[in-house]
Length: 152
Image 1 (spheres, helix red, strand yellow):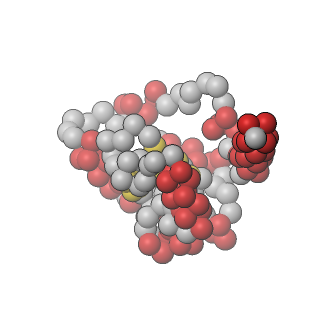
Image 2 (tube, rainbow, N blue to C red):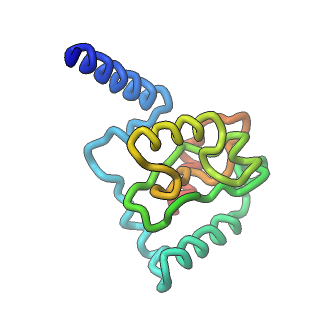
């Protein structure tokens, strides 16, 4: 019985790795942290975490000449507990997320909710956001240039 459970667990892990490769999420599987030290200059304002997030949200809303923003309905910023030690970052909003203005509310969101529930978590115990905050046209992957723009 234990052997069969190991095989099922290994297959699930293999499926997860294949999924990450499919969505080109190699940075998620990297052993080295992302270097974002250059950002600290733009995000060192005083205030609470909520005030800082609101300031960042306003800064993103003011972005000009962005094709993602032009084609999107809503800004999809974040959802959940801002004081959580767990942050889930998606690639970019889909159609459902764009319509509601919240991350992970479509099919992927339902799957995420089930995964969180399986480990005794829910959206009130994690913080959820995306690499880019506006929906790419036709649900395509965000380009490297678009991702870079939202990192600054």
